[in-house]
Length: 218
Image 1: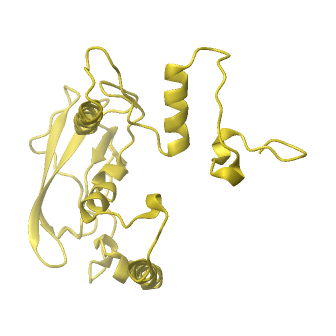
Image 2: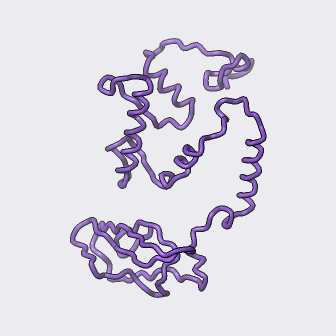
Image 3: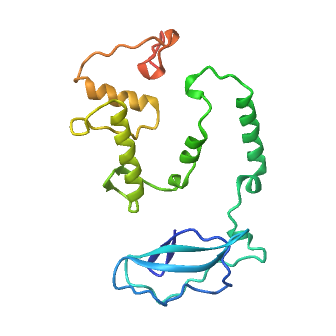
């Protein structure tokens, strides 16, 4: 996101064909409201030409100061979105070695099972770019309409998996790991000061159960 004349320009730009000193065109733009569209044509990528449409959200009247775009080198490298192999081959090589290790190993830890390709695509998608603090319909940041749709779908599937009526049960699908998820369940079914028992760590329990040593609690 780049500040430009009192407005915020949001979008992805890769190796455009304009030259140094060129500013955003004023044609077709008005600043009387709060939401406008800016058309960016003839965006050149490494392999093909495509069109990209950015969204210009004006929060206040535009400034008279022109903001030039960054200079682009002769090869356009400053705007190329390289893959990991080109951007950091050393890191890519380490990842490939780990992938080979996993393929050649038999992992007996269930939670370390090899992830499905579809899951890898989802967790490594453009959704990782977005702040989505809050709950569906009650976010701190804007632009979460698709995040809301996805989280609502996940909530519905969670209810369906346990054959629960959404009118009687609520569900939170935001815990980032097992321990917070467990804690949500505990606080949902237990009353204040209720006793909860867990296995000792050496007997198959988990650190989050409250592992005790002779000197202190872990």
